[in-house]
Image (cartoon, rainbow, N blue to C red; front, side, top):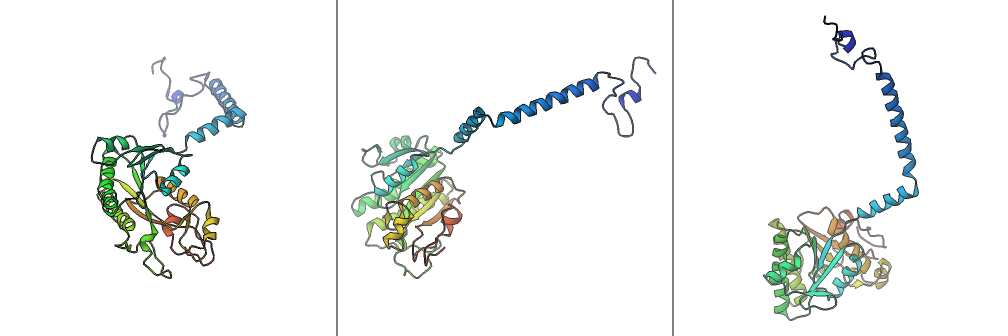
Length: 301
């Protein structure tokens, strides 16, 4: 055997193959290994100690704040009461942009035509809250035009711009034709009365949004809100005596959750407050949006 080469015993050749060189072949290996172990233990002690220092806690808090979801949200029908409630509630968490057919009050004017103005309106937007009920005060023809043609133009531009989600604000008044003792859910067919232009236009707006979702052009959560919408929190809704009432705080919570929840391509969700003799079942609101289940006397889940 060549005198300058290590023997099989030196390199640890055996039935298990080649192992790490022996300490005899590398006399400093044991010393180096001990030094590395000591340095590693020292670094771990320093790391554990630094976790609870004021500076470390401040850095962790700042990092946690940076993880908060921040979306650029376009809200239509900005001058309506419902849009105002939603905009005020979302402003603390998201970047809110307002629009209406006529500008003013912080809202950008846009007629929602099939044109560059609508394209520019949705550019850079992450999600849209489209007010589909009582968004405008107009005659029958104008209401139907707004909730069909204008809604189509808005969603087409949004789909082309890569907007990820639309939350369509509808109303449970579409089910007011059913008797109150019936357990109406999202699977029931709505009953828009032909003599109520606002409800008829809202129903048509739902259809437009649903077709875009079915074609997988844009994901849509269709929130049907209770009535009336009561200022304040759940207590105010209970005190109203209305079996289908929804409070403003619940409206905001529902919209905020709808913007970020793991929804289907098209998702109907009924939302009302937990009030005595609650009229509508809220399975989707409880399971999907994680809203508090009904707790009032006679309430339904």
